Image 1: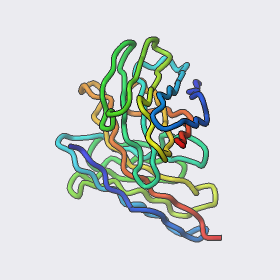
Image 2: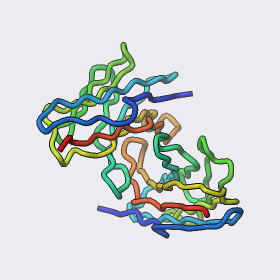
Image 3: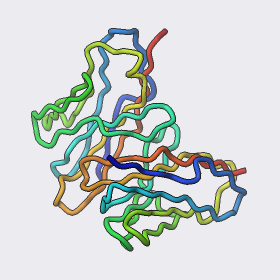
Image 4: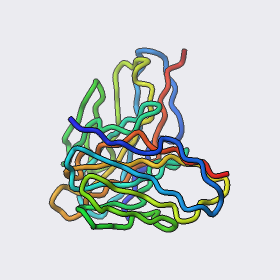
Length: 111
Length: 115
């Protein structure tokens, strides 16, 4: 089996700050994803990548950047944190679209 | 674009009751349909899928049947237990090899047991 590791587990930032979230997977999967999870809104796709150095925008990409420099890692940057923002960011990977494996999430709080 | 609508908010039942969570979809093509489950403090995990009309997916006592006529994929379980308390997500996606690896998720339905 494999595992997805997300760091940090909790992230507290200030308004306007640039914040970076990291994700590592050892499944050797080609595709990786970043989702945002808000209460009552489900999972919304921010960015995904189908191979190293590839980036595809999701439905919620505005305000975010992403980077896939290695097959095993995928990072997400919040370019300017919004005051009172609270959400969980979930990273996932898949070999195909049938089964996505998720990490435990990074919980963001902006003061 | 593609979308998924599922039972809103929360469902609460007594132990051994029958659980139904409704899921309806809207898609331009012929999507694959999925159920994912998320336990507290964890990321979602794949429950099962169905890829064609009338196909039944099942896992851990849960099941759903792909119905193209009513564009539905309702989740059912005959006898719920405490361990089933979780958030359930319905999702749709294109079949592998069709060019997209994306899934579109519903907003989630939280199931809990009435003590």
